[in-house]
Amino acid sequence: MACKDLVADAKLGCADLVFKDICLDILAKARLVLNAEQFEELRDFVTETLKDEAFSDSGQKIRIQ
Image 1 (cartoon, rainbow, N blue to C red):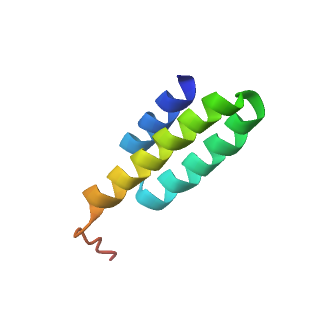
Image 2: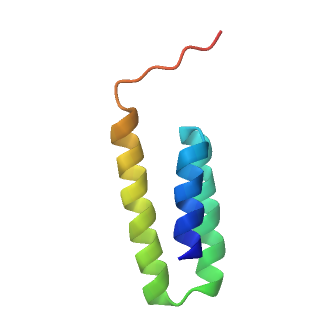
């Protein structure tokens, strides 16, 4: 549950590339402490969150000055 909260918080406060990097870091660390079933559940949650993030950002452009 704490890992899912970390992912959800990161989604709210990070840019897309940073969010993906944070998710990978969370998964890498969670793999060390979660059992296989818990890790698969977290992995599926992160996958769905990343898909949602990809669709919500589609069509938006960032202008860098």
